[in-house]
Image (cartoon, rainbow, N blue to C red; front, side, top):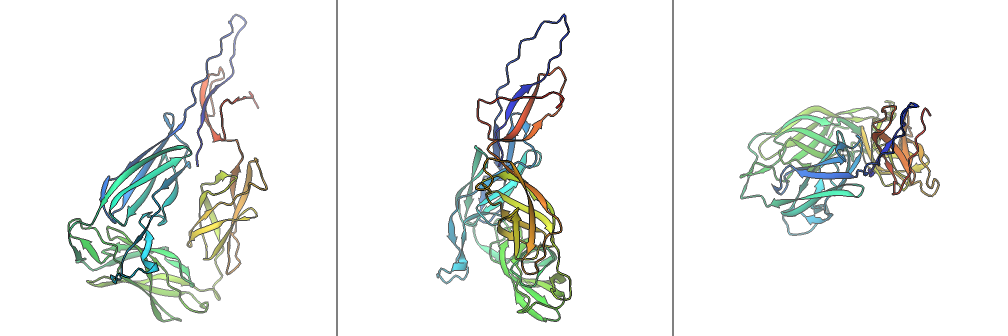
Length: 404
């Protein structure tokens, strides 16, 4: 969430005894936030990834880094008859249009250098509108997706597996990991060379003490065939007494490839359970009403996790060993109209391990100032400056204390 800013002129004027007083100069017109959205292509094949790029400016300058841009797509459900049995199954239903980062129809990203981008796709043909907004400023673009042209063919090359990210996880499974490599798909469209959504078979071959092989659920196939996203299968009924080294294999219609010891299921008895450590919150502030999508970067997050903003529990959207996505809770009933900083902590529910550190998250009031650019100027004054914050409604008065 970002805020319309006010361009305000303020300063101090020095004069000698012989100088005549100078009439005040008129204040400049406030400069509003603007959003300009572009897409990597206005036409694509269903399943092809398109990048939406939002440029956000405050007048002629880029907004501060960390300004949140909300990307949205139409929220519509489609049916993919994967079994080709003309029978609709619950697992065959999903969003028609979604962002690659979270497989959802909405995504919040933070700006760097005044720009934020989001990759997305459509699983069906038709016109799809993607939007980006910062406060009341918004822009949108429409992309026309066409059906895969012509026939498909089997992927000719054998799969290649380079790595898994992350490469370790909880024995309980259910965590999303990315498999990176080449030819990680089953069919390609002849005319475009893009992979279809048909998934190769992914197996986790667990070593001692489990010594079993499980098939993983594939949740996403990249159109270029260079990565898959899968959910890790559960390693065992009971917590294992040691780490389990796991071979990960990918099989298409041509051949199979295995990354030996490519994944580790963490044991929970002889090994000290990981302690969460927090590195950063993105973003690290939001309105008192809550609802801000916050990404917690760190390590030692052992699914399932609990996230607390002060004494309020956040809704956890997703988590893996290094990242948690959650929704900041509201503090409006207890802290009306007051800027408040709370400490964010993470707790691994199964082991009771609490993060070794906390990070501050600022809840804003009805009006607060988050930044001033530039924050220096000539002592004679009349330097234009932009105040960033929330809740500015004209008319406003700005007071400056010299030397304070």
